[in-house]
Image 1 (cartoon, rainbow, N blue to C red):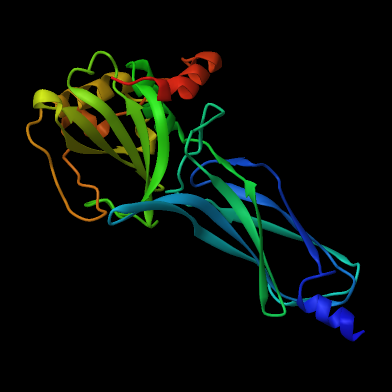
Image 2 (cartoon, rainbow, N blue to C red):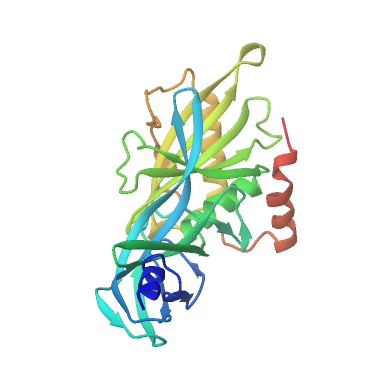
Length: 304
């Protein structure tokens, strides 16, 4: 009996946990539902709590050494303390909202290279916390995100990669400690002026702030950045030719002189003007799945 108690403290013969998502696909502002299945081990166990966390990988700038780390950015409480008899089973239902600023991990069913996202179950027993493996979660774009991304592809930009950067964007209200950058190689039509563009969405229940960072070609191969910021409401997504609007944004950036700077981990911002600030999108589904897959898979092979 004493040996079994010692094994219990070490986690041997303890309860097992399996989290089942009703669907592994959601959107910013959407919901995730499912059940946490817990099976009792060889002995009675006192469960202290069960919680779930949304976890993703974030790039961190630290002096001359950059690194990435897993960051939990949203947590929900599933259950408090309860007794779990040996061999008994419990099914704990859950439902939680996805933050509006949650990063996009896929586009038209294709995984965005560089993104990691999952739900991690945390079970606390006898002061010891067991953090399980990630259950993958796919976050698809909202219609406004989809319209913007499709517009860049229609203009000839090619997807490179996506990542999350720790920090706050200057002049933009954020609730999460990081922001997403979706990088595109420049379209041939702009390649003489622009190397690439990084697209950042900071989304809320009413709309999205769109921050564009253009890596511009300069004299004798030098480069400098130009930043632009626009705001679009969700209900404006079908009110304009989004590809034309994005084309205007790019041309505006190319015409700018100098760059906007701000220190630290804060991304600078520019200013939106005219129709760009009330822009909307092209209808989805123009690009076939095969063509889009080639763009996403081969984007890293293009270098202008």
